[in-house]
Image 1 (cartoon, helix red, strand yellow):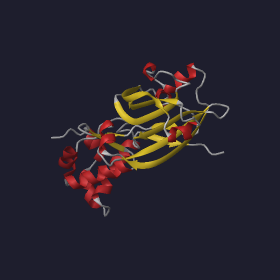
Image 2 (cartoon, one colour):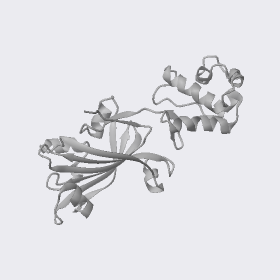
Image 3 (tube, helix red, strand yellow):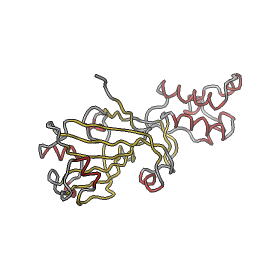
Image 4 (cartoon, helix red, strand yellow):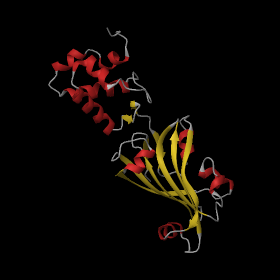
Length: 250
């Protein structure tokens, strides 16, 4: 017998009343979960009871429960992690009009940033990199491709490219790229960023522990020095349920 103060009962209150409404059951379940989040019954990072537990307690089909959860995943209120379950999304605010590093975004909300390297090295600038960074065909760049992690959870894939004349050795970088550039007095003072929604292929999805085809936010960023010199070109894929992007109008 379930205890009256169990989490699942605090979320769904009196399940029998759900059938008294003309609204579809999956929408009622979604509404109950959303209300629990708004009231603080479920907090950012909390695990949602399993689909099986909800089915047994509320007395609805597995299909109904799955549809209710998927509705909130699509809205960004919940996130699914392979092999771990469903969690209340904890969003990080990324100001598009401010040159903030991933580490700074996490430190602002007392979360721990980390990285896992996929690849890094030095090479001649490609045509695209020459165009984005105003480089000549014989100039070299440093490329740094890594998984960005928040509190042990992968939340972004990031490929950063910097002219080698500003950052000679990528293997010396252990933390924030912007901190490393600041030490060399070439930290970006302005950024121009573009974002759009894309679906991740199998290879990229595996790095973030999500299903292939999952929609994510793709951000292309160029960082500039005060005199307009391009210093950084970054392409990143962010989990939409982990980040909130904002920009101030002028």
